[in-house]
Image 1: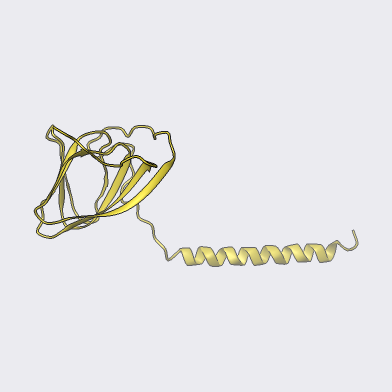
Image 2: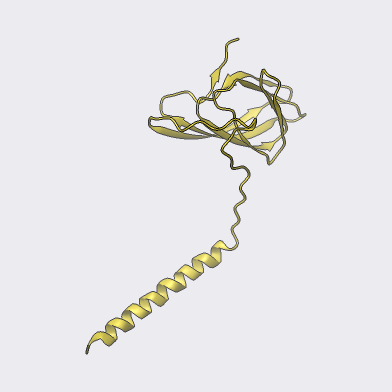
Length: 146
């Protein structure tokens, strides 16, 4: 057992150093907050989200600006799509009459493979940050031809 004293002392010191570093990191993280704006297993109209598609994943984060008074044409998203409105006001609607009004700070889980359109119903440009969980080489938005 002779000679283990310095080894035990070394590992005790290492453990103390690692613990101190972890406490500093945790201490710094106490000032950081995370607010879940939206988390769901269904789109905004209550339809369940489909399983993820096979293929090479490609994530895009896109800032979409819709001028005041402008409309988005009828379209679909074939893959999971979510956004947060950071400015302005939007109304999203389906051909069947379902609608959702979106205000700054609101998170939206978009409809997948369900036709919908939108309009800027405010007096300023609407800006929405959109996250598309797509498949490499495939469009994340497709126009619906009526």
